[in-house]
Amino acid sequence: MLALTVIGLLIIGLVAYGVFFYGPTATTSTSSTSGSIQTVGSSSSAHFKVNYDNLTIGYKSGLWSLSIQDVSGKPVMLLTAILHTPSESKICTGLFGGFVFSNCPSTPPQSGSWPVNATFTGYAAGAGPGSAVAGKTYSVTIVAVFADNTSVNDTLSVTVQGG
Image (tube, rainbow, N blue to C red):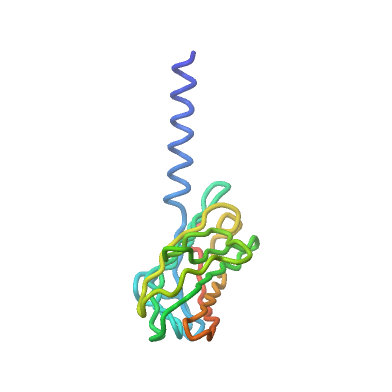
């Protein structure tokens, strides 16, 4: 009986894993581009090149992954990306670069600045990405504070495809 229970739990886990990681994927576009374009390395905003911006939904969860590269010519001090799904999700920079905080603290820590053309990669899982609906388009706002104390807001969009 115990063996059957363990086998049953393994099968349920494998099905959930497959739905979560191999569910619908997304494409991204900038606000200045009409339609959707492929995510890998082909989208850019005014201050950041988007390497990828993927939103995958799955059973009771979801995964949003983002990689952007600074192309502003200025060192970045603080960076936050906000996914505007029904349950908003944020990722922001931490002490050692990259997007390290999911659903950011109210005052993300700063540790100086990152070099010009730095790449920032991270992800958020759960409620925000999980509230996305296949076929819908959601905006992504990138808020950057540069070493010269100027700040910018860039907007991208991500469309969940499939169903």
